[in-house]
Structure formats: C-alpha cells, structure tokens
Length: 584
Image (cartoon, rainbow, N blue to C red; front, side, top):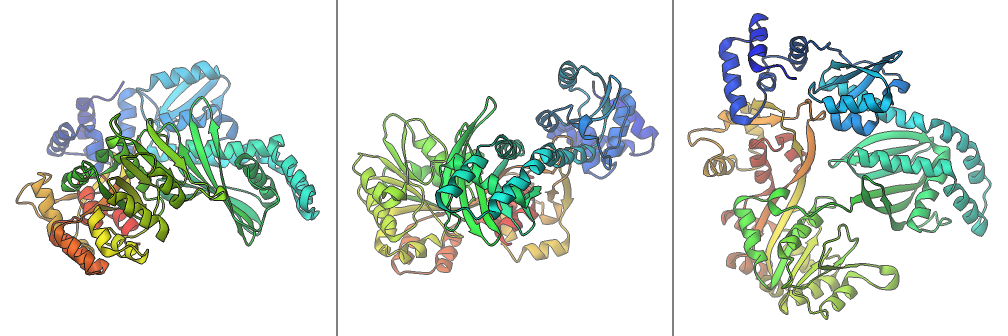
C-alpha cells in the first residue's frame, strides 16, 4: 500500500507544489538511482519531507500526525518494545480503551502492525508521521530507561551511600562490595546499561563519576553521546558489579585495572573489554563492546578501492615481508588486519597471532592473547610464535623496541608479518620504527607497504545534495590538491570529462524514513604507501616523514584526505565528516 507516482504527481501538480517539468526530471533521477520520486523531490528542495508525507497520507486515506514536539506517556510508549520501535520506525503514541494509535514511516509494514496487535491485544490504528517525529519519540525511550530503573536506584542509593561512608577496609570492604555487586537491583541496572548500549549500536560505554552524579555515555559510529544520568550514590555498586563480572580486585581503588567478560543472549553474543581508572571523583569505567558473531569484512567492504586496493592485494601475495597499518586508537586497524587474514587463510598456510585483546575469533587461525601478569607479552609471545612453523604472523601492535626488532627479524627470516603502529600518517611509520632502534637498512629490506587509515561515518541513502560554492572550493584547497580528486573521478568515470568541481554534487546528512540521524555505519579512508626503490633510498638516508610523504605522492599515492573527498563526491560520506576525522 503505497502512493503511486502518478497519483502523487496529480496531487502535487494540483496543489501547485511542483511543475510538470520538475516532476519529470525527478522521475528520471529516481529511475537512474533506484530512489522514490517523492524522496528525489525532497532532496532537491522542491517540497518538504512533511509535505510529501502529508500528501501520501491523504492519497492512502491514512491520518497524518505530527509528533515532533509530542511527549508520550511512558505506559503507552512501552507497549511497543524499543527494539521493534527502532528497527521498524513505528511507535505507540496514544491509547484509548482498546484502541492504540501507532505512528509509522512505512505504510506497507503490515507484518509489524500485525505483530503488535497479536502481542498487545489492542485494536491498532495506524498513522503516518515524519522521521523527525519518530526521532523525537525514540529519544523518549532513552529517558524512560532511567525511569524504568528509577525506583530500584532510589531504593538502593541510601544503602550504598552508607557503606561508602563507613570506611570499611580490607577484607570487610571486599565482602560488602561483593554483596552489593550481587544484589538484584545493581545486577539489573548494569544489565540494562549493557542491553541498551548494544541496542544503540554502541562500540563503547563510558561510566563517568562527577561530584554530584554518574554519567553514562555511548560511543556510536565514533561519536560520544550522553545516554543517561544516575545518582552518584549508586556509583560504588555499579563499579563493583563490573569488577565482579571482569574478575578484578574489588578493594583496589587507587590503581588502574583491566579485564573482560562475556554477555550472551538469544539475540547476541558480545565480549566486553573493561578498563577501570581512578579519577578525582571516583573510578571511571570504559567498556569496549566486541560482537563475537561478526565476520571479517573484505578489503572492498572496509573502503579500499582502485590502485590502493591493488597495491595491498599484490603485497599480500608475497610470501615474506611486513605490512603495517597505522592510525590512532579506534580507527579500525585491527579490522583491516583481520580482513587481510581472511584473504590469506587457507589450509596451505599456518597463521599465528599474538593480540591484546583477541577481538574476533577466526577459524583455522591460532590466536594467542597477551597476558603481562604471567609474562606473556608481545615480545615473548612473538619469540614463541616463530618456533611454531608459521607462514604468516600477525602482531596486534608494535609497542616497544624489543617487539619491533623481533617483528622485523621474523620478516627477514621467511615470514609474512602483519602489524599495527600508532602514527598519524603512513610515512610517519618509518621514523617511528627508527625511534624504536630498528636499523634503516632492515626497514627498507622488510617493510613492503604501509596503510594509514581513519573511519568516517557513512551517509544514508537519502541525503541532501548541494554544489560547492566558490568560497568552499577555496577553503578545501588548503587541505588537498583538488585537481587530483577531479582527475581520479574522471578516470573512474564517476563524472563526465568536461565537468569541474562546480558541477559535482556533494552530500550532507539528512533525516529520512530509514535513517533518522543521516549517518549509519562507518567506512575507512586510506593512504597506501608502497615501499618502492626510491622510498627505500630515502629510508636508508633516514629521511623525515615529510620527505617520504612528498616522494610517495609524486609516485601517485593518494592521501587519506583525497580518498575521503573522493568518497564524499560519490555520496558515501560528507566533506564535513572527512575534515572532522583528519583535520580536527
């Protein structure tokens, strides 16, 4: 049940919202891009999202409701579970007797309507609304998460505060904290936080104590967002519960502690990596959420393309040497290494890894977890790995001089070594290795290719297109050579040969039916530095990162910012997002 294009056309022309010619152009674009003609009209700014949905509602005979500023009663909101509401963009907003009014974006989603009817025993009255209206109601689920556990929190707060103020030390404190951590209310609060964070697609949970309260924040698609605020009094209970799950010392409040635990339900399996750090107002907890069911992505799926992809693939075919991936924490380096191992993984080779932590399990790959407490470090683990007859060795991170020397030696003695370094650019990896006391001639003999990367948020399929203004083009020239971007776009036939930057559409995030924030998921932007003969000469001469960078660009290396701008021109991400991760 959808408004047919011809019906929509008749109503739009009758209302004088668009002309015949404008509709025809939008129809042609819709056919080429597999979009709906109404969505094209909205993206071109000819009609608003609300006008389109009101028109569709009128054609279909479904009432329209504007929920952008509506406050929904908690009892009504909770009739539809948050998971269903988010995944299907459908919310309950009014109840009268046995009638339940639900607002939705997709009038064809009859299965969800039927499911709600079956599980709630209400007569369902469907209404159409805008993405902004749905977004407003979904935000209220976050607020009701706090309300859902408010009674439990209030009940526990006084008891927890009293224990904290009692100043119990040693074994007594340990027992009291353990008792609190295992009480049902505290268990339920921590479970709720984890469940909610997973539902929100979070990669990390931050639990931060302040003077008067406890703040929970989620990192979603690389950006931190406030999730909820809790009373400061429950801080010790929540931290104690997480310590119990992670098998950490309950009575240690002065030193940082690291641990991990697993959560498993019918819907998901997650490995949770825990870091606890003493701060001025208590202990801060950061939990990294690692889905155990995730399969490694292909190099194409993570964002490598064209010559960069070909360079990496060619170097993966070499039986010896070293491939390095560089970038800051959380930029997807490990995911890139896992993608490489998936390509290399076959019965004819022995792949061994030393990692901290093992983020994902790969069948037929021998993965070893670093454990410094018992003396199993990257360096000691690597010494043992080379005696395991490996063809390919993956070292999670080169952190110190000893690991750097051992990794280089492994590459020299007939192994393919994959590893990561913390540097901001591909060329910066060379001086970093020299700082770690690796001889320049050994680097030039072993390192075959270096990738630097960042993660940018993906734009959803419905986005706002625009043309760059002269002032914007002038500003972008500060960051990269726009002629190179234009040349690549023409070579790959993404634009016509006569087009200039003033003719190319770029895109901004836009709230839509399927994607309320305008962004969903992330993709990598890369620079791939191939260690050619001229680069080897520079390495031996101990040239700095800038000299190596200039030579690599002269030989055709595409920089990260150029790769990002090309992806922006393709509509994969936005220019603002590329600048956010590289420049800011």
